Image (tube, rainbow, N blue to C red; front, side, top):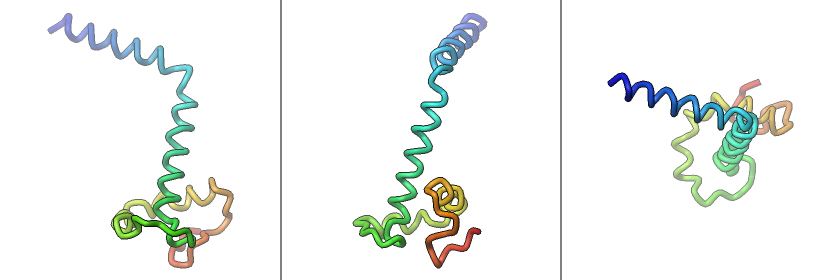
Length: 87
């Protein structure tokens, strides 16, 4: 077991060394993906037709906490939606 643990530590160290220069890029890509997902989620409320609106409706309670940060990143000082008061 000792050799196996050492091997796992070595692999974790190797992955950390490879990932180090790209952390900001990875974080930016993840943030962009989240922004796109939130745009798709709230697009019907913003007036953009969303063909999967019925399925995304279930996600609103989980995503409402992230809505404030999202609309600030998108450059909107106040919430663009009348039904959601976050500011």
